[in-house]
Amino acid sequence: MAQKRTSKRKRKIRIFDTTLRDGEQSPGASLNTPEKVKIARALEALGVDVIEAGFPITSPGDFEAVSLISETVKKSAVAGLARCMEKDIVAAAKALKKAAKPRIHVFLATSAIHRKYKLKKAKSEIVRLAAAGVKLASKYCDDVEFSPEDASRTEPEFLSEVVEAVIDAGASTVNIPDTVGYAMPEQFGALIAHLRSDVSNIADAVISVHCHNDLGLATANSLAAVANGAGQVECTVNGIGERAGNASLEEVVMAIATRSDFFDCTTGVKTNLLYPTSRLVSGLTGLVVQRNKAVIGENAFAHEAGIHQDGILKERTTYEIMKPADVGVPASKLVLGKHSGRHALNERIVSLGYTPSAEQLEEVYERFKVLADKKKEVFDPDILALIEEQISEVPAVFALRSLHVSSGSHTIPTATLVLVMSDGQTKQDAACGDGPVDAVYKTIDRITGIAGQLVDYGIHAVTSGKDALGEVVLPADFAGRRFSGKASSTDIIEASARAYLQAVNRAAAEAGAPKRASRKGKTRGRSGKIAPARGRKKTAKKTRPSRTK
Ligand code: KIV
Ligand code: ZN
Image 1 (spheres, protein in one colour):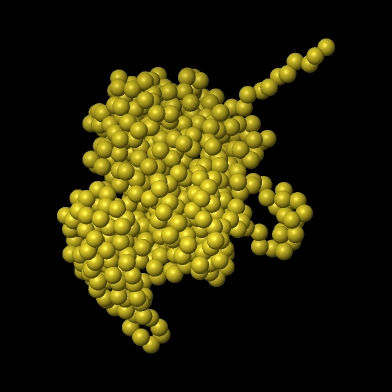
Image 2 (cartoon, rainbow, N blue to C red):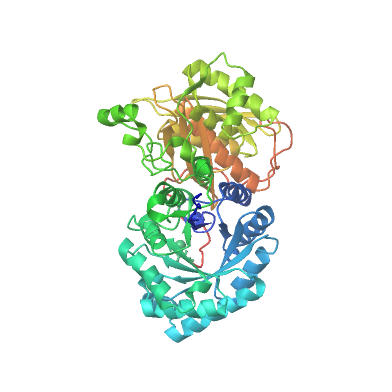
């Protein structure tokens, strides 16, 4: 008799990405609306279930970003955050009006500390406000999520009471945040188990978790919750977020995928898009990913010890639990040399997932030829760096024509630069600095009339070898607004100049400069002057208008 096949379906864990809301609250990160839309598109392609696009009441910029993302994204649900206040909920509903799958995410703190010092409210008042907030949000939207802020430090019995009340009021997702990253995995897992057994209507809602990384346990706590029945994990690309950040999306997703034998769960994330998405977020936020970051860090698949290298050569699985290709890390193999033509380059670029315009391809090709001359061997990561810079869509209000730097142990570092303006004219100037990079940045400030303050500066080698491309990633403040830049070159001073110019160009565009000048620098004058160039301060100021949380 033929045996009947029984294929047990794995439980699907929903991935709720909050890169654009909690992630954007990272100290040092700031994204403008087009950049947020670009990230939202990438998150949709990645296959996340929910994109938290912002906190609409906090600023016109957040409102605009949530509205535009709502118009753009069709496959993933789009969430807007709101306190349990009518004005917040109405703003979120308005911003989400065009979303195919809108979700209003309301929150209210429940822990004794927050009740006593922040809210000055009794337990009964908290339950009433939470339920009222959810009820009001349900009038505007079928999909309502509620978060009892600081849940992990809330008395478990009171947490059950709040959760039961908000589900009764219409919440279809209850999110349990470890707001200050205080929980231990065993304890946090037990809290989820407690809610599952203690809350009478829990089956009517999905249990979600939202863990912060203050003790480096955000991923571990999220996974402990999944093991105890949570059905949604809130996380961010590269783990960015308030203070030490949120649970890292790539870690959560790859843990569930790699240890599906343990979790018996799955997610809808296309894991081969994790690395490109990580690079996109890092480039646009200016937040550099640490080399040894799990899953997508530069060293995540590097084997240094001889015994390990020997093992890998004999059998990859001796020391590798994931393949670089599983997460979209391009192979470090020789792909092209200086005799390769446009066609071969284009084929390589397409195989890396990009479709440049003819103009973009031409410009990447020009830079490729220069690089191939200097470097002899060009690898996939080099091509990725070139193409990402070319398609960054930053208007070239100012472009670097040439630079000369003199520096040494007994000379004053001095830079001379020639920039091409968007009207095709060139301007040149010179300045001294503390070091060659500082001198270059001071010269750019003098030429552009836009003063920036460097907030951070990261440089890394794109591949190994002394002739490797150096990639510079930086955020800088311009008159209270933060913009990022990313550029690569075998000359790290040039990479530093171009990365900073990219941030300057973002700032100039935001201040009302012409939308898009050709990279060759054709036409249209710059109208928006951000701030007169003054001395560069080394300390970063926190400039974001303060959020409600
Ligand atoms: O950390 C937190 O508690 C939050 C909530 C708004 C979910 O970000
Ligand atoms: Zn949070």
